[in-house]
Amino acid sequence: MSDAGLADLCFPPASPRAPLPAAAGLQARGIRVRPAANGDLPFFQSLYAATRMEEAGVAALPHSVRAAFLDSQFRLQHRHFVGHYPRADFLAVLRASPPFAARPIGRLYVDRARRHWHLIEIALVPDARGQALGSALIAWLAHAAREAGASALTLQVAHDNPRAVALYERLGFVDQPATAPTHRRMICRA
Image (cartoon, rainbow, N blue to C red):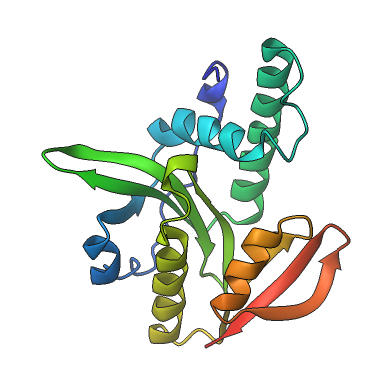
């Protein structure tokens, strides 16, 4: 993926709210989170492409067409997220790699601006999936929401993503009335 044209994309200034609590459970798994920086955008762009290639049905397209399409979709998604959730926590997920520096393996976006928290996005690189890291991140977030007095943690998931739906159901999320024909709205009550 090309990082050309990312200079006009950025994250909003950090929210003045208290930072999310540290999580011993995440650290025990060798992962941590930190606020995303504009320098993370090239990695997030490649992460987007890695997670959307199959669902976008672009794998058979020529590389240049596929790259241009996925780049444009990433840009649109990023602008949507920062425009609709300007006070959200945009987090980079890192895996500790002793003795080397931590390397990015994902992103986690959460909006804590309302009485209920909303999980906007969670994505992990393909080689970090299937290791219960997503479950650990969501459990940490749900615990932090409860500790902060939030009434619930909500999310939206595509109807055609049964693995994610099954994960969320295992973590205690239940369906709410849908707000979009392509997505299920789910809630985990605090």
